Amino acid sequence: MAYNHYTRPLQGVILDWAGTTVDYGCLAPTVVFIEMFAQEGVEIVQAEVRTPMGTYKRDHIRAITEMSAVAARWQAVQGRLPDDNDVQRLFEAFIPRQMEVIAAYADLIPGVVETIAAFRAQGLKIGSTTGYTRSMMDILLAEAQKRGYAPDSLVCPDDVSSGRPAPYMIYQNAINLKVYPMAALVKIGDTVSDIEEGINAGTWTIGLAKTGNELGLNEAETNALPPEELKMRLQAIHEKLTAAGAHYVVDTLADTPPVLQEINARLAQGEYPV
Image 1: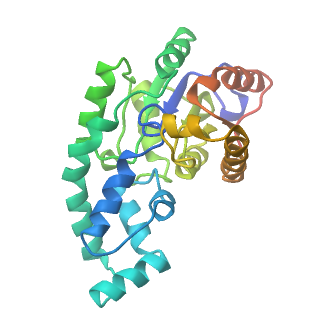
Image 2 (image 1 turned 135 degrees about the vertical axis):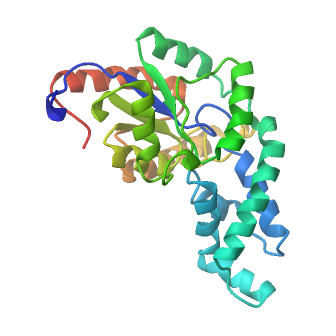
C-alpha cells in the first residue's frame, strides 16, 4: 500500500520509558549523571543534565562534556578539556551505578496501566524505545512487569547502530511488531529527542509535558506547585515540544487516547505525518 494512501487506523504506539511510563519526573538518570561528574570534581546542574535527555547514555555524557560551561569547569579542575577517553570512562562507570539505582525509579506513572489497557482494547500494539542500555532495561523491564506493564517490543540504543534522534529504534520496533507504514505508528515521549526520533522515523508524535524531563519534578513536587505556576511552566513545555516538531502535546500518557482518535480521523482523510 502506498505510504500517502494509508487511510486505516493506527496500528501501534511507540512509548518512551522514564518520564513517560515509569519514573515520574525522569529522575533516575539525573542523580547518577550528577554523581559521576562530581567524582571528577566537576559540578553539573539539573538543567545541564536534562538538556540531552532521552539520547543514548554515552551520547548524553558526550553532550554534557561539550557544553561550554561544563568544559570550562572540567578544564579548571583537570587542567585540560574532556576528550573521548573521558566520555568512555564516565560511560563505563555510569552503567553499573545506574543499574544499582534504576529499580528504585520503576514505579509506573499514574494512569499508565489503564491507558495501555485502552490501547490494547483498540487493537494497538505497544512498542518502546529508550536511552538506557539493554542491561539497564533488563532490570527496569522486569520491575515494570511486576507492576503491570509489559510492552510487546523493547528496543534499546545498543540494539541498533544509533540511538535517538536517529529513527532506527522505531524501525526495529516496526519490524518486531510487524507494522507498516510508519504513518500507522505514533511515538509518545517526554523529551525533545523523543519527538525528533518520531519525526525522523516518519511517525506521528505526541509530547508529554507534565510527567517527564522538561518539568523534572516527581508527583508530590508537581502537586505542591501553586496552580498558576504549574500552568505557566506546563505552557512553556507545550510550546517547547511543539517547536521541536510534535504533532500534539498533552500533559500525561492518560491524556493521549482522544489524540489517537483525532489522528485516526486524519488518517481516514488521507493525511499523514509531515
